[in-house]
Image 1: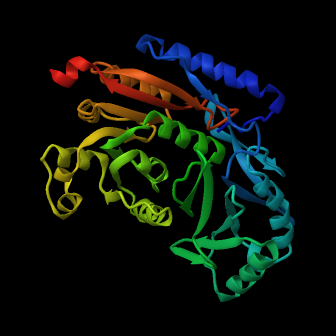
Image 2: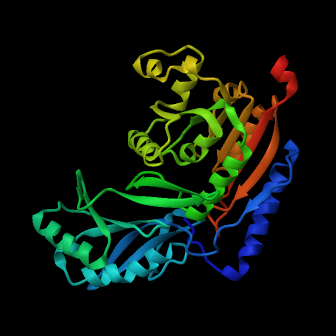
Image 3: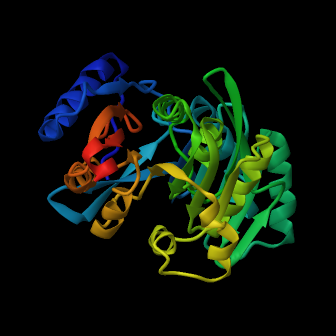
Length: 373
């Protein structure tokens, strides 16, 4: 892994390079002009994890720089500050070390620290150890929690001690609305909160005026898009395989007062089979699929993208909203999707500044020949 070098004065230059690269890579699909959503140039990550390095009495945060010519060779890089991380994380990093450096119960065999912060000001710190944690550790950790004004979780092999709660609450202002999200420790959440807000606003915009139809969402996670898009549709059915994420998504729907959305625990592949009538069972029956009139599908798949069968399944929908964290697999999937659909909106979200990674959003609409044919 390459540790990003942050230079805010060069941010516009690096973003323009991404815009040019994505524009060239997708030119063969004849998309509309690329919409570009910039990130804050620094302090944009709300969650980070660091190794904790022990050298005698010294203690410091570390990451590993991998030799591009020999991936087995790694160099330890000391981090006293990390400008990629939120200001809360940077402010807390030295305070945490100062608080535990001289306390053997807190620092002994501590090898990793994870920070989860929010724009709304909450902080959750996970301390991960190569030893079992006991009552004496918990007493010290509770004092540390009070001193730092954060929430703490202790982890060790087959052990997880939650001192207050295992999640934070994020509050995002989107289109003049305040949306709240439970974000659970050690589960996926969007790391760049400002870009997350931009993605939600864009998805709301491209699906506006859809109240006469229903939305089906695959890979819904903790309901990030589900919460934001529910107002745009008559009903929403979202699916996700992670048990933790499904539970969190249901809590988020309730927290936002959303009554027209349901979340089912099922893989995207199994759900596709259920839609085709090839899969039954209790979970499928509870979804009452015959009650929906799906006009739009939203997919936010992992980096591997969608398999060929899933792409063909999406072609049945009049409108597709595809959120992608990997432009290469997105392009592969568009080779199939563009046989029946045209790209109407195309967006670049700079989720990870100072890296080559790009997040893209695509709105596709089915061509008239395939609506009536």
